[in-house]
Image 1 (cartoon, rainbow, N blue to C red):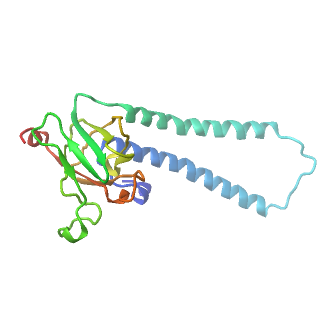
Image 2: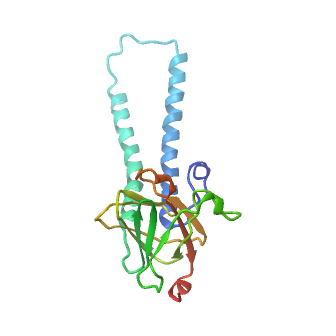
Image 3: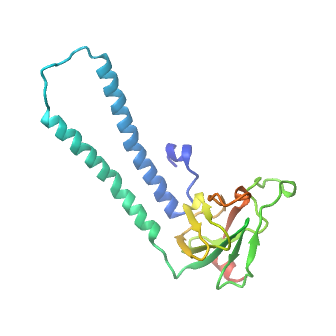
Length: 222
């Protein structure tokens, strides 16, 4: 992973998160370049004792500092639009999971798999096993296949929530009476942690999400 990705974002486990990291690095190149240029010019002007009182206008310079920022914005906007279109893609023929936010826990349904709907509560600190993360571990992890298109549908049974797993590049609002959907494809097996990222009430910080990958064959054989 790049230096900026290591400083700010988690390791990517899906194609979408990898694209987000690439766009992050792309934007940082532009921002660091602009900051360096402004600091350089600021220092040069501060140390320069020359002045010109008869200079009334500089048409070429004004055209230059109008055109160049426009080109830089286009350079930034093109990959941004591409990423937005990638986020909107949703493969309905893949593996489907439904997540419902409650006060304050998540419940899951997996159509097409012989797994009963289950709830996922945060494990209390006193019941954690060695190696488990405080405030992030749940009693029932969500099994998700890797190298398989997955569509996660999110809704809420009460107040607003947000189903968020940073390593997968996924963040969806859970709205009562509405079904939001987002697709992903996990290409790195592992266990991935997230939390509700909506200020949904007193126990907002205690709605962790744990995704554990498995092979599609193992899930279909359950």
